[in-house]
Length: 90
Image (cartoon, rainbow, N blue to C red; front, side, top):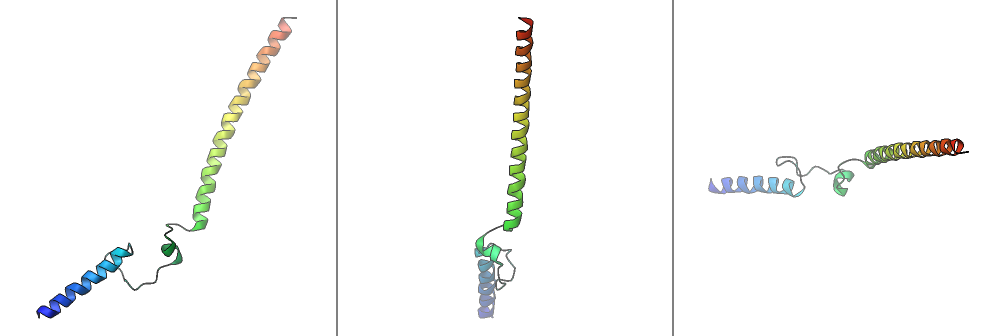
């Protein structure tokens, strides 16, 4: 009886230990085959990661474009002011 209880405890501890080592839930199947992405350690597929990167870069480009547009508008206002002063000074 003691032997059976010890054997069960060791088996459950090994089961949980293997899952813990592979970063899985404690009572998941320790013999289940991991996908390639899990083996590499990626949380999302490369395509999803690429899409996220493109979205982030797109937002950055839009922000840069807005800043450059505002800068161009400021330069245009300055140029118009200088032109008016030059015309008025003649």
